[in-house]
Length: 141
Image (tube, rainbow, N blue to C red; front, side, top):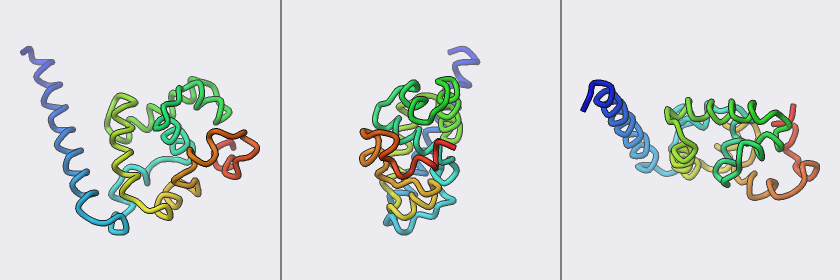
């Protein structure tokens, strides 16, 4: 193994250990015991929460851009911002990390962290028109 590969492996191993500790912390207590400052979800903007929920539904950057009313490049910026906050580099890694956190918080906790966006926003409003979404002002400003 060359030096660059060894460094990458060490970095990935460190990240895996960090994610394992985070998952242990989240799964050891009940959802009501999870504090917002302990998880990445609390650090995301409302637009990033919309992007995250759409990612979790398998939507593309183009679909995210259309929903947010931004360019596809701007949607990519939102996705990269989420990845950076989680310390990961792929969409599937984002989904894996976020899934654990979303499952660990209550609907009320999520709504508070997401600037008012409901935890079930994607299920409730993603399939409908933008006009039928009462939360659109949270992410279309």
